[in-house]
Length: 304
Image (cartoon, rainbow, N blue to C red; front, side):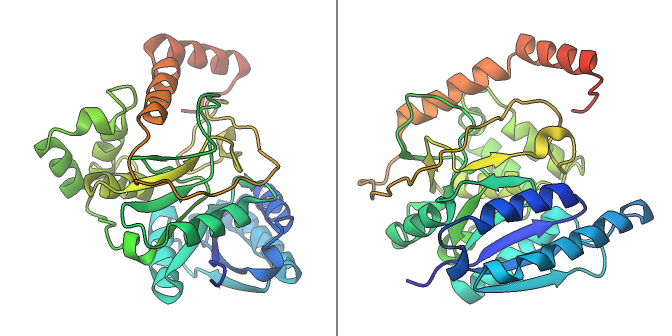
């Protein structure tokens, strides 16, 4: 099978972009892969210089990939609109895509894992998403497992699954409530994914990821996830669109290959789901959040 194209979405963070590209260039399949870089335009005059700097940096990637295609937006689209458009455009052309943002550092075998997984599960209709980042650091997780939840930090999908994406957050929220699924959607009430979706409908965030998560959840479609992280998110320094400060989602990069074996039957790993419930119960409790807020205040970090 041909390698999946890589879609990288960038905005105004030159140093993050440098690190993201440097890590991606070290992947063993980089030279054989086609890269699409979507560069959003400045939202305000204050961002124009940093956007211009990013656009210089992304041109340095040309020698490291089979082909580099740069899409420079002439007006500011915002992350959600840009991702939805970019994924839809390229998935209709290539049938599959790998998606990254400009604050993600990938391990050397990231592209191999993603392409192996895309090939292994291409005809498994119960699996619609691949996620290569683990932030739980839970030793009980196997190398790969299936779970009814989608992460957005280094992911991939197929055209057959992307057709389920519903951009209408209100319709998704109403369906979750009608079917009385909000408790399960929120990992037994331990994390506010329903609240995140509600805030999207109220215009308080513009997350495409929560709508993608809900879209697959409501269609009983699973994600192949990893127990050893091939992606590290650096966006929690306060520079990310939907990421606040803190080290809550830190992960350790796994620098070796992860073998992909087809899990059959394709059913959710309930032990893995329970690991996520434990993680969110530990990190999202009232006291855990209060302690993090105090620590950030003492360090002068007043982010979310």
